[in-house]
Amino acid sequence: MANGKSGKGLRGLLVLTALVIGLLTAWGALVRSTGSGLGCPDWPLCHGRLFPPMEDLAAWLEWIHRLLAASATPLLFLSALLAWRRERQPALYRPLFWALGLVFGQALLGGLTVILELPPTIVAVHLAMALSILALTLVAATRAFAPWAARPPHRDLAAIQPAAAAVRAIGMVGLALFALTLVGATVTGSGASWACSSWPFCEGWTIWPGDLLGRVHMLHRLVALGVGVALIWLAVRLAAWPGIPRGIFRWMIAACVLYLIQIGLGAINLWMGFPALLNTLHLGLATAIWAAVVIAWVWALGEAQWAEPALQEAVRLRHLWEPYFTLTKPGIVALLLVTTAGAMLIAQGGLPPILTFIYTLLGGFLVSGGANAMNNVWDADLDQRMHRTARRPIPAGRIGRREAAVVALLFSALGLLLLWTFVNATAAGLALAGWIWYVGIYTMILKRWSPQNIVIGGAAGGFAPLVGWAAITGRVDPMALFLFALIFFWTPPHTWAFAILTERDYREAGIPMLPVVTGARPAALQALIYTGILAALGLAPFLMGAMGRLYLAGSLLLNAWLLGLALRLWRDPSKAHARRLYHASNAYLFMFFVMMAVDRLVRL
Image 1 (cartoon, rainbow, N blue to C red):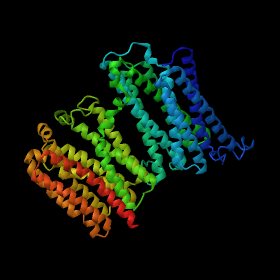
Image 2 (cartoon, helix red, strand yellow):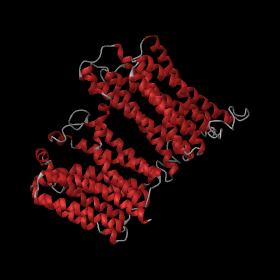
Image 3 (cartoon, rainbow, N blue to C red):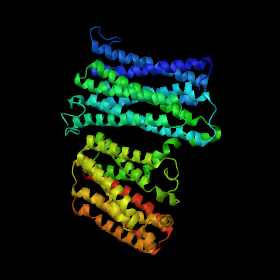
Image 4 (cartoon, rainbow, N blue to C red):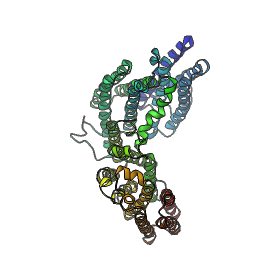
């Protein structure tokens, strides 16, 4: 909160800075829509001069864009300096310093955009950085006004909960809106605007075209539909939530109204052939909607954090977002992404195309994270009975079961859309199959009813390398099936070792894991048998000629190491030996995929 004359001046300066940055973002749309992005073919000069030729409209449009950027920088710098020197409040000057750092990156990226002749990906990243700079400026501006400081701070956690829930909900909608804007920039930059000539469907009644540009175009419309529904739902929820300031509700209503106008403008834009001014207005409205959501989010965050010092730790931003992150089970997702990335490197025989690599991992993260979140939703009653899982977000009461289910489905749907749009249908189909196997077969059926739950249900993890392989090749080859089998036979010893460690938890929850049903020693014997099968399976790629001597040596060493630990656990099924096998199996899988990727690369 900024006070006094300097505070009033800072508030005015921040509002002016935000307006200039918003205008700069909209002007960038005009530059792109008129094809003036290369109006000044050099940088930082224009046609080798300080001012462009008078008769060159494209050069002037690009030059004014650069002038606005040059104006925004000193305004931002002055705001940061004033917040730092006079207000001495980190909540004000830190986001401004972050924004300044992004400004310098934005300038370098702008030059790169000109030099590389406006590749669509860089254009989208350029817009992402502009929206981030605007958001950080609005964070400082909203905090400078601090509307929540007009009343006494909260004295109990119950009064904070509605605002904390609003922070999470508005934040999720804001992230979706951010992604939508970037997809829109990709549509424009890639030429996908013309891929669908009708509205709301594509070329008649087609929802999902067969060509890439058509899919990119329809992805934008589908995400736009989802964001619109989420905005309206959130506005209705905010109106009903007790204790939410009306100001937050009004900003979200403004975002909803602008969004409805935006949808109509998008249809008119298509029917009129994408004139430059309508294109500019389209992004200008998107920027205004983004600004309204950011202000509502910062206000809700300030409302949640406006509390007595003893309560402030509970409502730090990391604690408000942590439930969503924890729902995805990041440790499991990281291991799955290692196998996905490894499969891509092996299939390519080197580094895959960078965009395919990024979209596959991003889509895989969302789908597997969504599946894990749905596992948390379904198993909330079991988690509450287990000491190890009682602190997870749902049983601990940090997030509701319904809210977690919505997050799980949104993550999963977005991940599948990304894979289908930017990778290929085979990879998306395999990711969906893995999701159904893990959620439907393992979580909902086998986990509660069969001691062999992990043997059959654990096959879900084997779909991760299949997705990576299909992302590169578009099909499933024998080597991909080997990777699937590798995960299939690796899962039982890995999981049963962990189950021996946590047998008491599983017993109290009534989950029929094998060590609970048969005891530790018979479970250790079966873990040893599966490890032996895994070791024998490791010879297959060398015998098939798919891998070389480096792989053979590494495979023999790794499998001998894991087999020795499994044998030791069978002889003495203690928790200490189970812990060693469990941790070693994680390292084994990581090193095995790294070794296969290196073998493929060296052989080339």
